[in-house]
Image 1 (cartoon, one colour):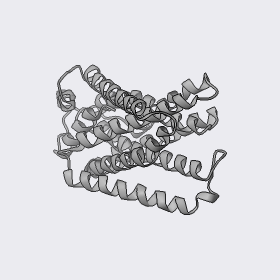
Image 2 (tube, rainbow, N blue to C red; image 1 turned 90 degrees about the horizontal axis):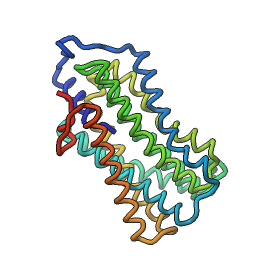
Image 3 (cartoon, rainbow, N blue to C red; image 1 turned 60 degrees about the vertical axis):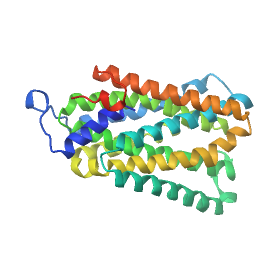
Length: 290
């Protein structure tokens, strides 16, 4: 995700900066924001495409896929935390803590009804794990929806918002792939995999329009949403996905897949930031448009 561009818009709005290019912002309509962010969310469905060419993952590749999903979630969590620092550190820390508490309590609550749970043909423990995972990925999209909505209302208006939309849309593809790999590992049908990869991204357009309309309110809450999503993703990575992956692959394979996916995801993010803004630098903040 092009977090640097999102956060520069958040910071600019928080400072009350309303000037755009040549001092005149090019504002978008709410319908334009809704349309752009809807296509952005649909891009996550592309992550399910590889599973239309294979019937079933072997045990080894299932473990690699699960490990890769952890790598995506760790990289995304790192980005959310890093790029929210300085906006409101208190809200960020509170968000991380409450995200951890929320997902832990949710897991215990669902465990009480585990024997009666069903999801897409799955029952019991497998159904519970999928429900938790999809819930967390959906919560993760909340922060992105707020960020892109704020960017459309920022000092550069539509051009800035369009860049952020494109960057997050491209970022949605590997996130959709991470979601699809977890679903595929539980033998969920291809059509349902596609539906759920898109469904987990729907908070993006649903939150983008209200955050665009009420920019001051949502820009203030962005660090909390980012921290909350990060806390959830970190918790489920270690509590649920890694133990499942270790049933399929050795620890060294797990570590290699997680590390490779993490640095590949971050490399993609930095490349997108540099390409879309026409700038380069050693830190993500260096990519923020001036």
